[in-house]
Image (cartoon, rainbow, N blue to C red; front, side, top):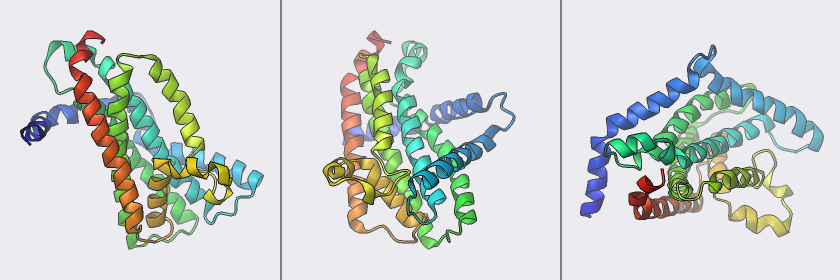
Length: 261
């Protein structure tokens, strides 16, 4: 219990540093960019337009509001992919700071996930634009989509902690994860409906945490349903178990980071 209190105390103590790291990443991303933050809205819109034109015509997917279906899955998975990839390299890229002053090391992967969360919130504007254009009527259940985002955020922090705990010692993990995240994307129903998945691959789909997060997100945002309790429990289980594993692994290895960065 005392250790948990110390974590919260450190988090509060270094909250300004966390804000500074997130703000720095945002400034770096949009530095010398003419479109600036607008690009966070345009990028998912343009990607969705290309995917919709190609896949809806080529494969004739029978999905109502296909464009909204695509962009809703696209922005959520992109957040997970970007945040975990950035968090993975956050420790060794901050080596100069870690060597000179004491800072709780979990601040660095957490700042990358928070930075990606800011980008996701901007990208939600693109999702709302597509929903409006395609005639998806937003209901009060829309508020539950933020719970979906919270689940993915917690899950991403956990995965990010696991990755940065390993990649400091084995840099090849960075390249391997690039392959894994690509395979993970295709194993997630972002651009295709679940019912086209062959039965022999269903265990792969049902064991995919992002499948549950996307289903939760789409149920509340696109279909106007309150996500059922079982779905919430599945999402929460994946999110918080992964976070606990990440915290444990990170704590076990963090004292050795300085020897390898």
